[in-house]
Image (cartoon, rainbow, N blue to C red; front, side, top):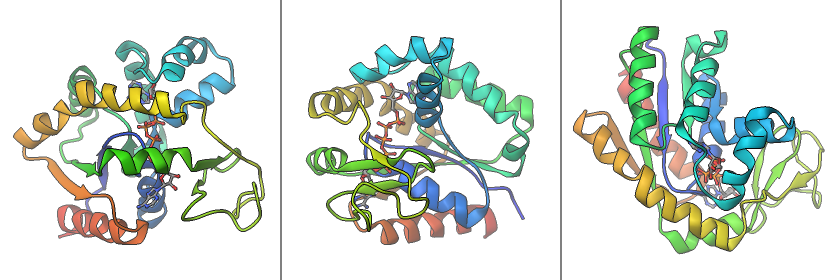
Length: 221
Ligand code: AP5
């Protein structure tokens, strides 16, 4: 069976993390989310976390040099050998170029890029309603999928928190950054014949069945 290697691209709040979590469980491959990795570095008050925090709080991208080396190290992890989902990387052409070199070095010649598309205003509502479990990372939408017990995760019972960058002004800045720096990647990957696009404004389940069909066809067909 071919290893599933996916890159998920899409604006903030489009549902990359939600879908990556489901695919990760379904296909038994790790979800490698650079945003989560950076938030962990901030929490640990590491050198990288201290440098990254100011960019993240403003809704800007963390400099390529910092993110690329963090991701390259993560790809060397043993679990990534069985396949992976990159959630939120690459986000610039420089990151995509670096990834291509790293893939060549690791002997990876087959992967797919899935772009999620949705309308911007519906995302502002979604992100303002997002809460995340402080322990297991499960994502909630307080409007459509609230937890069973107020403020507590259904899976592990830990408390939920709101991300610092989920404020309307920061969300709008993240959108601007996405449109100028990350959106060009869709053409970059389309030109290489690696891009699939999924409309991401339906239910989580219907989006997931579209994504699963794409994966099955590309890797197991
Ligand atoms: P990151 O954490 O990657 O944030 P993002 O790309 O802005 O994406 P989000 O995590 O906000 O959204 P998502 O698409 O995962 O949506 P989710 O599934 O949570 O990055 C944060 C910051 O880190 C960046 O701004 C940057 O500073 C830095 N960074 C990270 N990677 C970097 C890189 N490579 N280079 C440089 N800097 C980097 O869903 C959102 C909400 O919607 C949830 O509440 C969810 O429950 C709900 N939802 C999901 N799907 C649906 C649906 N179908 N219907 C209704 N609600 C839904």
